[in-house]
Image (cartoon, rainbow, N blue to C red; front, side, top):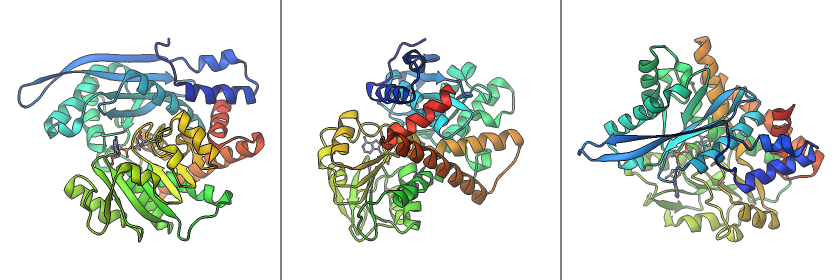
Amino acid sequence: MSRILVSQNIAGYLDQAGKILNYEQKEIEKLKEFDLLAEIPFNLILENGHELNLKAYRVQHNNWRGIYKGGIRFHPHVTLEELGNLAFLMTFKNALMDLPFGGAKGGIAIEPTRLSRIELENLSRAYVKNLQGILGPKKDVAAPDVNTNGQVMAWMLDEYQKITRNNSPAAFTGKFVEYGGSEGRKEATGYGGVYVLEKVLEKESVHFSEPLTVAILGFGNVGSHFAEAAGDLGLKIIAVSDIGGGIQNSEGLSWQEVKDYQNENGSVKDFPGAKNISLYDLMECEVDILIPAAIENMINQENAGKIRAKIIVEMANSPVTAEAERLLEEKNIILVPDILANGGGVVTSYFEWLQNQKAEHWSKDEVLAKLKERMERAFEKVWEAKQTYGVNFRLAAYIVALKRMLE
Ligand code: NAD
């Protein structure tokens, strides 16, 4: 069943990986099909009595390697097509990370920052009411994504358990620790990206400034934890942004101070001791490493030619368009792909799912040590494929994942 098409960019990588590995094209075409596209209309009644007509979406791409797994996002840009691409990425990310999961993604097209707390809770519960039949710990395990968090997962799990009358903490991951979540989950995606970056720096001989400088586009969960781990590694964060604006200080920014300021004021904008900059200034600033950690397609043909970073680590999913990728390659900018760089989130979701099923609780040190080991193992596989086939990081990652899918 397939009503939506995978973006040409991603499909192109899959086709190239298939050719390199000598698979028949009909095998590759099967991987472009989707197992389920759910789109359920429902109404949300706001506190002022207004009614919003919404849709609960869930896309299940492929389960050859295991049950479906993927995040849920609340964002105005959510469409079935966008979720399809993201579900497809999840299938390959899970294969690359060697997890027993297939790929899925879900969401609702809404601006959740305009909702009150009770409205957000009702929205989260409505999502589960409408899709409970296809979700579950042995079917499809959801997790947080853009604008959803441990609280949203806790509401969703509570609703799921009420409906099914089962205790099933493994139905949702990314929960608060007190609610059965894993230690280290909220840090995992950002930290995982830094573990991969460390390996890239070890292998690639690029001339960098001393200390290495970093700019982060999207100082949310992933971006801020990336900043934290990068700071611990001795890297200097010189610019960060969120949807409200950007800030820069070439002397370096303390991730914790910026986070505290953002939590209090809603944005990093106007942070004392830094100058305000636009998102475009941030992308084009003189920096060694640029981290897109917001949403899709933020690096595109309009701005890619102006980027001066030497490495881009894709912490968001699909932050670089196909046209931009070609421009970056011409400039020899190293691109570390999303399915490798941000795989730490789903790896730790897997740890949470395991802990829930075994009724265990692992310490944060244990989780992070296991995460580091998984990220490094995935990196080594990708590096090996990159060297063997003489391809870029993204194609190498698809080669490793595709081999796992088909063999
Ligand atoms: P988040 O909502 O916590 O943070 C997103 C950040 O991006 C915020 O600072 C927000 O202000 C900013 N942003 C959003 N839209 C923007 C725009 N149009 N322009 C500029 N800034 C914008 O989300 P997150 O969980 O940190 O996820 C960020 C990205 O990482 C997403 O692409 C997500 O799919 C991907 N990702 C997240 C995880 C995870 O574990 N949370 C795992 C893998 C991938």
